[in-house]
Length: 413
Image 1 (tube, rainbow, N blue to C red):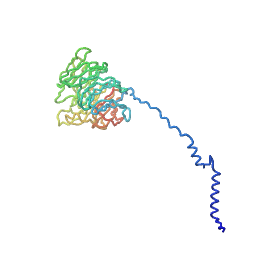
Image 2: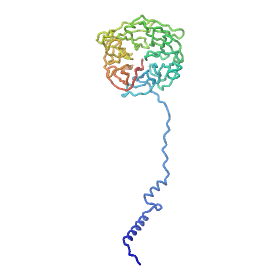
Image 3: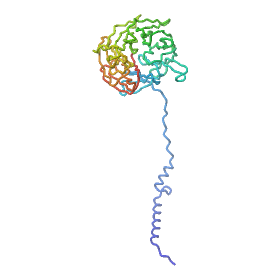
Image 4: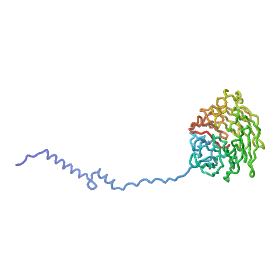
């Protein structure tokens, strides 16, 4: 019996057949659709080779010749060393780091080409065999040029006068107090200690000329030792000129390495001119920085409020101008460690006040560059990360940085 014809089913089958024919008509590349053909092409091509990375050579950068406005900012309480900063950089970023042990002493050659570090190490970090060294670094590469073993060195609140070098860079002087007060002398060229000068009752080292070094004494005098090429050193002392019990002088006073002339500053603000180049040290008449600034002379009473010098590295000198820069604060006697809020500038020859510089933030130390357009660096206020460079002639702030330190070194001294 013949079944009735289903027209709808036939129509659907015809449509599917037509679609299949149209698909076959559009096939290419071995019977693949265009989409599949493109995929086949990409699979058939070899993968691109990975990029070749450039070869990196490890090197160590070197510093340029030190500029007149460079600062070596040092915090001896931290075992990291001194950061090198360019005061002409608006951000005063760190350019390099001179390594040093905790409680090290540091000084520079006049041109900054050498950095001298007196430091102490123990074989087990905080104990064990002790080793005291005088290390000479190349100022550009910061590589060690020389290491000299020392008989010892004093570990105390860090001061720039614990360790120093002669103006020609040939001798190093390191102060020690074990077993007695002495200044060890190092021949830097040969890398050997050449003498130990006994200075009983005296402390610190202020280099003078090629072979001289001065030291402050507990009886209120100052002594100068001469180190001969051969033979034993000789020491000559001045008469006592300051009262060590009632008005001591700051160890952060200044003596010119070339001329032997300098200025000793007392806690009350008296300036004692000294000439240490002769056979016997000569001390001139003192003058008061407060009186020179139009203020009453500061006394030594613990209840007497006055402007007084204070801080850590509180005195800086511009050698060519004979200008003294003194960090000042308001306080009574024995506040000599207080941070300063102003810097007073004096002409050391005429005893005249040149300028009072109001600091943006209190500072613990100051340093002045030695060029014709000098910068005044103020740092370490509150022992924090504050570094400000001022125009040392006008007193205007010029650059700000965020670096900490309590000792600042510049070239030219």
